[in-house]
Image (cartoon, rainbow, N blue to C red; front, side, top):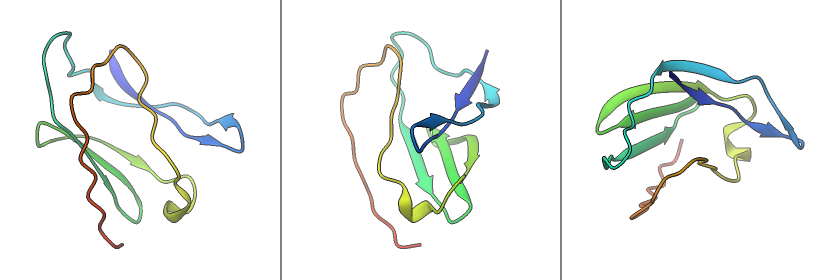
Length: 83
């Protein structure tokens, strides 16, 4: 099973992108880092590169993030960095 990334634009979902293997396990905690770079998102799990998701639109137009599935979030930290 691989990870799936997608984006919602104008109310329509784009093509799914699949990369890497599924590294998440039920009951096992993890740290997720998402870095919004000029060309795309760099995604790290427990400080190891997980995947890259290229921007499909202007990165400054991003207004949210959605994580789906059965997950318990125990904390969120947002760090803003100027591009």
